[in-house]
Image (cartoon, rainbow, N blue to C red; front, side, top):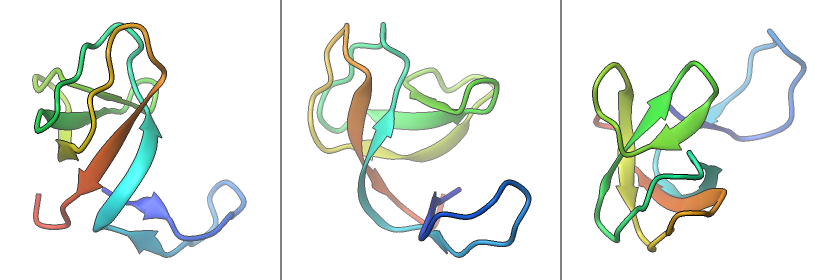
Length: 79
């Protein structure tokens, strides 16, 4: 899992950044605490605190209360 390094057309090859801190869209109703594990939910491409059925992407580096649309995530390429 990573963040596109540049804009690309759908289906085109793109370089991914797999480490660093990024502000990503999240499930608005999730109440995220600093240090919480975060997961990618493929069904809508949002970050969530729900582990079941989702892919771990990193941890929250800032709180993101309910309701909010984004969270700052430290990606870790080893997940």
